Length: 318
Ligand code: XMP
Image (cartoon, rainbow, N blue to C red):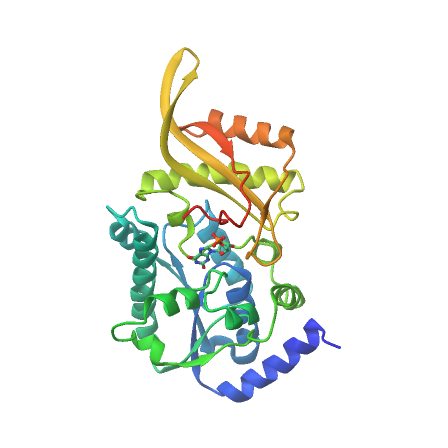
């Protein structure tokens, strides 16, 4: 019978003999797949695993710091790279969703390639690819691998793409990855994290992305997610997030007229992200979240709830 412990033991042994004393580089995303891949490799080759975690300025509130801290607690050899400004610069003036995705993917590759170059004599690139990524042409799991695949079909490959590839999770489904992660002591904040797209908040801000909009969205999303957790809904939904709409509407605050932006809350039930139904969150919970956002987040005076299912809508808005 398949057990997470047996899988881990066998995989760690295999990795040891496959990799020997070679150095390996891996891009951590904060998600469960790249984290579990890193843990297995760490158990197999220790400090020869070099992890890179890029802050693209499009993560959720406090996420970079708290996840980096978790990685360090796990003993991983990880370098956190603050590359926010490079991403914001590349996004300036872009409004088209595909152009935004491409710009984010391109900068990620440049930053990662730069970092990989600083590791002398690295031989392997590790990826957290899981079985559904292998069978679908497009990854839905947010890892760097998907970004790399879809953005480097033309032109020369960056140097790190010429490395040999190691993918220890290639035969696993998501729930199995979670079980292996749990067996290896991955903390809850990573283990049960909702899927999060590689381009992050960059595709949850419709239209042009600016650092100011990111800051507003992070605050609103933080209130939403914390309330879902407190109410026991975070683990019941497949994915939840907040979308910043490039629409202003009139409101009233005290005796002042306001003219500010709208956020939409999204929560869906799904098995694999391919189809999804909107989650029937309790009205009382939605009311509490809406009030808290409008009263605390400057720049937002209206909150709406997305009641579209996939298909025909998608989970993300861009
Ligand atoms: P959609 O919006 O296509 O999303 O219904 C399905 C799942 O995929 C995630 N998603 C992405 N993941 N890069 C990623 O790594 C992307 O560009 C991307 N777009 C969507 C989305 O969060 C959902 O879980």
